[in-house]
Image 1 (tube, rainbow, N blue to C red):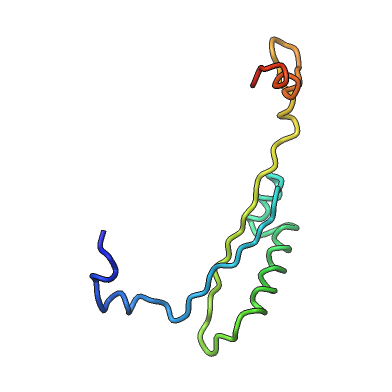
Image 2 (cartoon, rainbow, N blue to C red):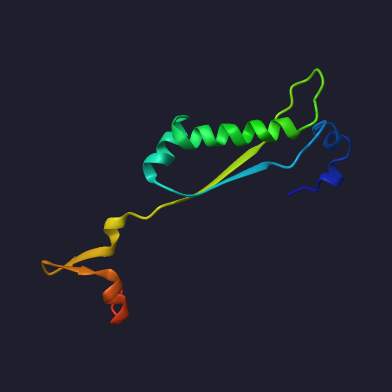
Length: 106
């Protein structure tokens, strides 16, 4: 790997005119179906992301004649399925929480 300091003038040419830190949008715990809709550009979460992004755009300074792009990072956690609490052992349906209390982990 080469340091940018060793490259010289070509490193100065590659720098963007104005760099801004990326905006972060935290959505919290989200269902799998909502994540799919968000990735396809539809749904309630997409509307929420658009509203937040428009608010961030309003805060930025006017770029002038050229276009200005703001990187956006969207963070979310997928909700666990509710059915994961039950487990079938030898034909009997048992509660995972009760099994963990007794020292058995599935």
